[in-house]
Length: 248
Image (cartoon, rainbow, N blue to C red):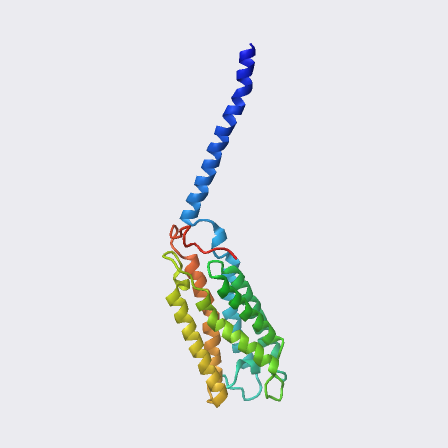
């Protein structure tokens, strides 16, 4: 009976490690298989990131379209800047001010949600969104002449939104096309080219500053949408542990 008692007391001790070991192996194997398949949602773009990226360009375009339509003076959408729609003395200036403010907030949200991108690119995108908020808070004077605070905030925002794609690039065979080095560099090159055109129009008073600014704004706010779509629509199973982007 003593032998039976000793055997009974030893059995759990001998059985437990083997059982726990098998559980650990099963869990580890499941986690590794999930990582290889690329299924964890933590490394993708959440739904609210998709919403923020889509809303930002929609707000800007609808904002400057409606604000230009209600101007009582001789506002020219091709020659005059968008900032004039939010300047002191503009009709219903709150429309463009709200568009600047909301678009900047949504750009910040997009930068936070764009987890597959490199941390440097996400940070620059967030800086661009914050600069947009400062643009809304720094209207131009009614008499013209510009505002230093407004110009500084606008310059930081425009440069950041044009340069973030190159800084957000990733390398690897499973990287979404919107974050591949060649595509990211080409996107920044195009955006910086349109930005230079806008600056040249302002300096030379060429008569197309409004057109250049609107094209620049549309391209800068639409590119995050395309990048996020490329991340969301990537083929399941394309990720690998070796080149999968980390979370910042």
